[in-house]
Length: 304
Image 1 (cartoon, helix red, strand yellow):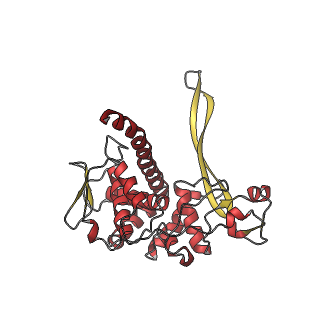
Image 2: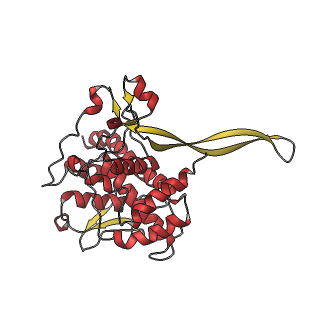
């Protein structure tokens, strides 16, 4: 690619961090969203994943967009719309592999898998005129934050993770394989409780029996620690978007920012890797929902 996509995205997130801002949290500050945002959506309503979520959230904040849908020039045209003259598109990426057959050292044909990434341009629906009304639908009302949030409770319960309450710290213990949380009442709001739980459950997915994620952490605060915390941050952001929960900066962010900057400045692919791991963690936790639904009828049958 003529443009170094890895470097461009990393530079944007590094610039945000140097200002003390988190790219994956800033979208929640959009005034007329009243604290709520969803994942960016393709023209057909399919959510973007991984690094594209961060890139489009950042583009939304920079331009002040509040609509969730994005599409290419041709997709807009096919829907009867047209991109306004002078509008600037936003970069998203597509990663895949190609297989090439080459002659090996022994003279035999060998297949080689080559990863590739290409970028393309999309426009927010606020940059497009003439689209069907469905793309202008305002966001639904925010869930009442005064009490426990039923759908979030159901989601996290369905993971089957061992959850213990008590003390004044939230953490995942790999040795005992449990998530420790302060009491629900200790949090500023129900959503801050669920956002913290989403962060810790992202850590929970790293267990060898689950996603077996290991960045070679040796001690608190080293590079492996910083990389895992970045994955947990992004995983929580993705889950909160999926569950329509507000994500707020935690007290730990200031301490983490410098370590994240060190990692990102030293490896332009680090944010892509972190986003990919976070996406796998979110997908894993979503997958447990389907398994919980499938096992319920069997359990009920046995009980009967």
